[in-house]
Length: 294
Image (tube, rainbow, N blue to C red; front, side, top):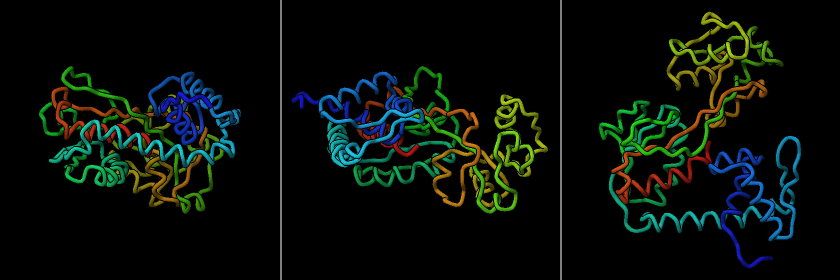
């Protein structure tokens, strides 16, 4: 084995293992697909083993890859601890950091991440605001924001840390009553959970060539948490993020072939505030941990 070891190779290996494809790993690491491919090939060469079988559906980890994963994750944990130490996370960082995020991100995605952060930054208190308003940062009403759109204000710094993937989902009880759609046109014969005033879902159907109107939706709301609870209650088929759907095993995916868009997630902070060790430590932690739960 080559004695010169590059940690980035292990990062790419773990991302490919978790995502199941070079493209997915590239998105998580904000790198190019060829770069991830080169990293894995180089790691295989250094270790003298085959880590993945390349298939038409993505990467299939070998037995060797699964055996090495535990050691690789231990390296990852140590690297993260070192990075947080350098950024001040282990140097007595304390105080309050105010974070703003959309309702689903604030209510579902962030709490487990913040629970882990509490172990690393025990002296930091978090104030969490569920809101989509960019003005929260501009008016200094929040220190850090997680957004689905990149702000264009020059005074804000935004870093894309991943993408929220969406799918069509329904409760098992609904599918038992109404049956499971086999092809996208079957949706027109089902009860759908849609929006009230927002038109994103209508526009999505139109892009697929389906003439859907508001009347097709058995239940309509623009409140994203109410939307999710409607799907959980069996009101119909809805379109929700994978990370949210994973929280309820009774909500299952349908029509995985639907071409639903991904929503980039941007970690945003005021340019001047990034000089704060406290905020920087939280910013770095979120940048590292959030992609793993998307």
